[in-house]
Amino acid sequence: MTGVFAGAAKLISVLAGAGRSFWLPAQRSVHGARVDDLFYFIFWISVFFFFVILAMATFFILRYRRRGEIAAQDSAHHNIGLELIWSGIPLAIVLVIFVMGFRAYMDLATPPENSYEILATAQRWNWSFTYPNGYVDSELHVPVERPVKLTMSSQDVIHSFFVPELRVKQDVVPGRYTQAWFQVTEPFEGTVLCAEYCGTSHSLMQSRFVAHAPGEFDAWLEKAADFVSRLPPAEAGKLLYEKRGCQQCHSIDGKGGIGPTFLGSFGSRRQFVDGSTGTVDENYIRESVLNPRAKLVAGFDPVMPTFQGRLKDPEVQAIIEYIKSLGNGG
Ligand SMILES: [Cu+2]
Image (cartoon, rainbow, N blue to C red; front, top):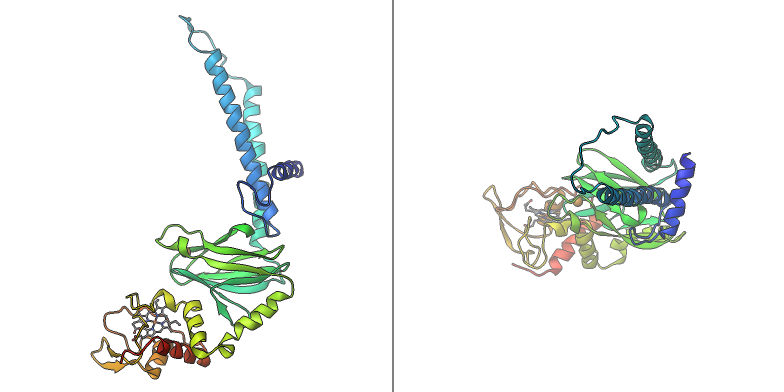
């Protein structure tokens, strides 16, 4: 029974041009077809009943419009046959929708055993993805034709991971892990979006999504992961500044932010909340990154997360060189 309906939905969705269509973006994952079939099933049923109801309303308006004085007439109290039909048909339709939806949901909710695992962290207002070798990037790169499982958490508020082409949308919640999985069918570049539209800048949380051709993903990961040893320190530091979330709070153009600007900060004097003062030098930057609470700059809130264990020594070194390259305020 549901097979027939799914088949009909499939036929309709093909006619409507599933994959990329007027309604939906291109389909690039193995469960895309299931999600789209359900969408088109509900969509075409709605279109069908829209016209049925419109036609019947028009018919009744014309047929039973008031024409002169008519005496009130007896009308039927009820009609068992009719009542069974108008209860039975909707019941059958919603049961089909339930079965299709439940099967698609179970599929989306159970990542295969052999999935490639990536950790995703959302925070206001960016994404970061941690790959199995420890490399962290703000872009999501995945291999094609292999199930990928995301284990996601949030540093602050509720976010929602969404890649339209994958037909995957999953809330990312503070204080707990949520999962999403997908298997990309062909290489493409898309965008990771945050579909949580209840704060000021969720809609700006966009990251590049890249699905690599077979064999190319491992090469990409290896190359991306050792940029610190490949690039001059100041350039590597700039990448770390962008990829590791520093840019959310620290500007490089002198503008104020949640934290002090890095422009011309090296060598300048600092007043700390405990009344002491100090100079921004290598040791101070290192301490600020690994133990931000040690010296709190006056006028700022103690909101900087520690990068202890999250940034390796050469990476901290690269950041120091980058901050130095932004001018000396001393
Ligand atoms: Cu968000």
